[in-house]
Length: 374
Image 1 (cartoon, one colour):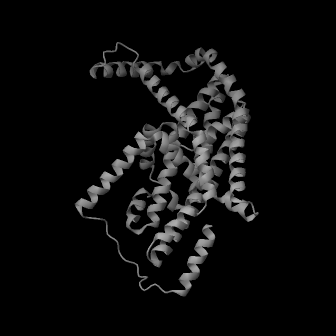
Image 2 (image 1 turned 90 degrees about the horizontal axis):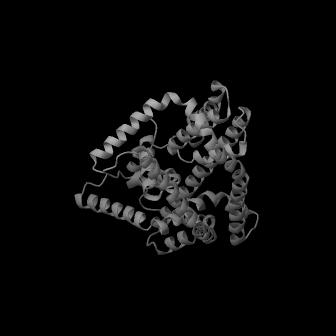
Image 3 (image 1 turned 90 degrees about the vertical axis):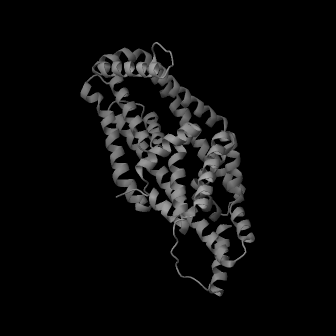
């Protein structure tokens, strides 16, 4: 148990006085060999993550979910649940809820998919003012394809859209195929508890190292769990508010739109932009009056601004904010690496890196560089 381990460490600490508790100034490494080895190590890890994505992705996803489930595990353990029963209960509750919500939205989603082909002429008519820019874009893509020697005579825009769709579907397929592996790894991570931390403490040579590893591990776990739980709670609030707003604006199917908003909010910046387009097209498809057709997208934008600019920064505080430029780069990079699951995991992984760097003094400069705000 992690609480027992930290209690024992603190008890031992009260009986010992470390000789040197002064804070030392740690400078960034200046040795070219050290810097080069660090760069090579990072590149080799990224290449491994790309080449072995089918193995590494479920492990990373399970680790992130383990941090998200940790508060629930502590609650069930306080109720005297065995760790295996507590882990199984949490997994069944969470993934059972996901399956139930998926079943609830499958019907409305199918209806909207069936309605879309019939509504395309209506959308084309109402978006006729975009024909000029779209044709110009197609011409540009066609010319760009010719300059790059593709030899295609047309369809540059269609090819681009097809490539994007293929990437999305491929990423989703890999994600679905790794679902069972993720659950299996997650279960054993939850059951193992602080086993890895305990073994690490046992092999460290000095008391100072043992104390530092235990405190750093618990601090990182606590901060990351708080971050993930807060983000999930805020995304759920956004989903509920969006569902109510879509129902009030006449779009209907509040559960479907709430789930869409909940999932899109896990992908900062890009997710809300996609959401605005989705709600705009849905409004134009089913609402006759033009100004009222714009209402769903406008309401979604207001909800996102309130959540993203006021509520979430207030709850997470400055130390959990991330540089938006690095967020965009991380989204693009991890989508290229792992597809849709990579885009969903990009920000949690970036937050984990920041929190870990903030807790390790030699890496504090990296954590400061990742921080958002002015």
